[in-house]
Amino acid sequence: MLDFLAVVLVRPKYPENIGASARALMNMGCPNLVLVAPRELDLQRALPMATVQAQHVLESARVHPDLASALADFQYVLGTTARTGGWRKSMQAPEQAARAVLAKAAEGSRVALVFGPEDAGLTNEETVLCHQLVTIPTHAQGTSLNLAQAVLILLYECRKAALDSAPAAEAPGPKACSHAEQEALIANIHQTLAAIDFLPPDNHDYWMIPIRRFLARFTLRRTEFDMLMGVCRQVHWAITGRKKP
Image 1: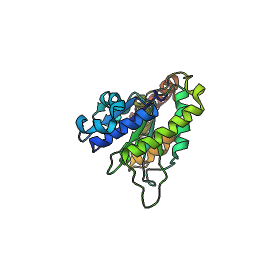
Image 2 (image 1 turned 180 degrees about the horizontal axis):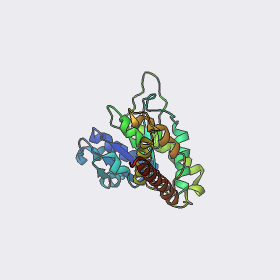
Image 3 (image 1 turned 90 degrees about the horizontal axis):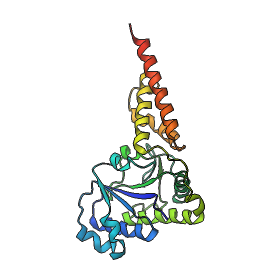
Image 4 (image 1 turned 180 degrees about the vertical axis):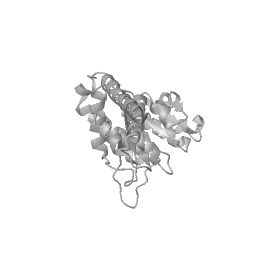
């Protein structure tokens, strides 16, 4: 039911948590586990927590050296965080995020659900790669969840939303641009805005966050990607011509 969805664990510390997360994927019908630079990938320690039922999820997990390469083939990326404020704005609750995930899936998008390492969570730079952030509401004195617990909660909300809207989830629309293509477009927009002095001179990545969030509202099609890339190219040409002696 959640074949369109992948769980991405970024720099997980403990093999046992990887195994327990694989079990959570199996429980909720999500077969796709992605690991980014795991600190210790010991299947002998992970397998007991995965149990025999989730062994195939664990053994088929894809491993990537960094988050950008892990997300390249996805169209929509949802990041998880316990911290708020600063770079981490416009948070969604799990049930809101699940509805957004199902809406994207109905449009034909492959979705990545990203979890940071147990001790520190995702960095600011990693949250920037996510189209939307979700936080699990917890007691003020107990905001830290076990990694597998957090995975299970988010997948449960996604499965529940899928059960409520199964026909929509089974009717994918035209293919959306991949995460790698979206990042190429954002880099081009960033370069263009800097060239016309739209961005403040310092901390460009921070000032690009609202633009990233704005673009994340839409499912970007290939024709729209080509159009926006062309607009940026024309702006660059115009600026180059204007600056010539």
